[in-house]
Image 1 (cartoon, rainbow, N blue to C red):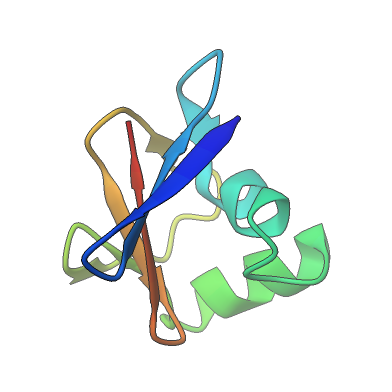
Image 2 (image 1 turned 45 degrees about the horizontal axis):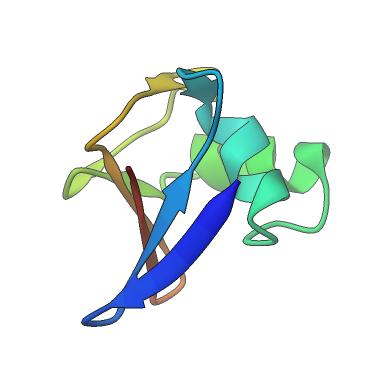
Length: 76
């Protein structure tokens, strides 16, 4: 995993891809636990590519942008 900042968007890289949305939130410390990540997603508080995403295990791939609580990350 590598990360760098680009105009307020943090670029992250995972191998292998895809990664589940709930696991990504936990890995990037956007949620304190997997359970919290799943709750936040189910409550509609997470955006995937600008749209509300409620599928906890949605596969996130290269180029996807995830936004939660004012923080945005993009998978390289």
